[in-house]
Image (cartoon, rainbow, N blue to C red):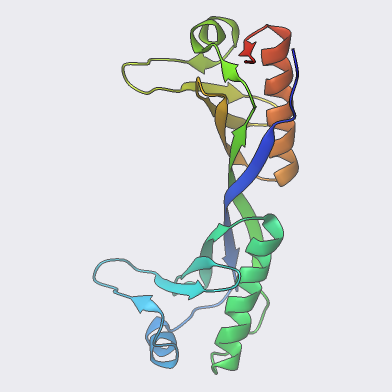
Length: 186
């Protein structure tokens, strides 16, 4: 049967960053009225960018968490942009931020249906309880990711720290599903 190439779409990249110095969030709020800061509810300030479309949480410790990017590069660019904007706005930041990718979430379409009952019996480190959740949860060791498999042939891959790991995970799993005849093509 036709083996289609999986369609992979990076949905969200989460990165942590640090400028290695204390920041005055009240001062940032005054200079950037678009930011959201409610210290009684949450200790971080939310700095949203339109391009790349992201939200960066800024903490007084100088640590940051950027979410919403669609690639590693976009994530790094977003943090760099936030730091540049803060500097332009008169916030003294000595060092550039060091950025670490923490998690990449991707959605995948394999182009065929998956026999989840059989997959649950065949794939190691898998959990399938359809009464609880409609997907099979598969923990991959190399690269270390968690993949949710749905009967529709759609997957969600999470836990990757590099985009290449997403593609490797998907390729490895797809090859295994093919090999064990767990894919159904109409």
